[in-house]
Length: 349
Image 1 (cartoon, rainbow, N blue to C red):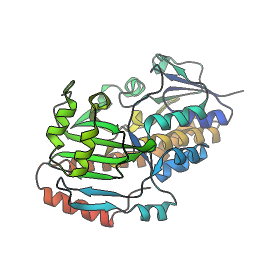
Image 2 (image 1 turned 90 degrees about the horizontal axis):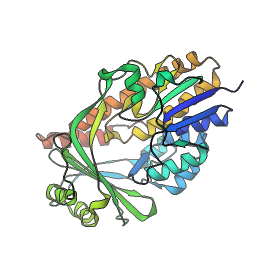
Image 3 (image 1 turned 60 degrees about the vertical axis):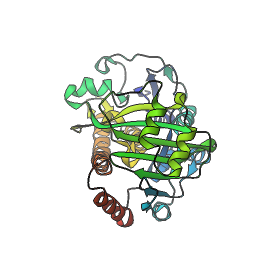
Image 4 (image 1 turned 90 degrees about the vertical axis):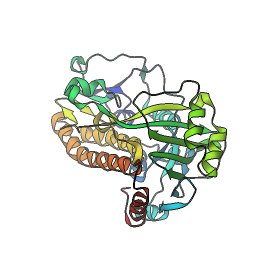
């Protein structure tokens, strides 16, 4: 008898692997279609290995671009330190690849097969007729809320973020750390440059129709690479939202026949650039356990044991980094500490 799964939200990695192994999978996506906007994601080696297992790793590498290095700077352009990308590649056998969110989702969707858009899924506890239900509905997960209640909802970090991409390849990969503010620049496919900026702000504060002016007021006096990006930013391409993380962490990623993956399970700040990667690895890990073990309860328990400890550890590390780089005092101490971490630390691949 064919086994079946309902995936609420994204969860395309899970859908691909389960369908490849004979499962019937219904992907129930509330949005009308895949997003057409979104900035670059860094796909780290562990996630690329998972994409290889799904049969799409080569395509992601071809569409994206390998990150050759990244420097951390001060607003005047002086150097704090750098990520040793060559050492990471020697250790893991692969480089970090940068690809926009719409492009990555397009690759995964093409491999996943039929998806149901514009579907308002019922309460997860009422989804009957499936062997397993997967909550992949992101930061403000309704599935998580139904299972664990309001005590496990995202919390505002105190930082807001602007994101976008400009139509020029500036050849820069850098994060600039100021007083309670960051400006990041990376490459992106298609000859574009991805950028993001964060700053302390009250939750929900916006500048409708005036976001570019607000960015230039905050960052327009920083070094020339930041100014070059700001000169190309247009109002209609600025994405602005607040940064949240899941706190406290969940006691489990599974409840009965329901499993959570990605941001629904462990929403983290973007400071380590690992959110999308961990969602991909989650999705494959869950599907592999379900394919391997015919007992769904045992498979879900194995998934929880495999993925909850490392992802919650990364979430803690990311939040610590968020607090450290976003300080407004003792900047020389912050810069010295970050320089030491970059020089002697070994980021997880």
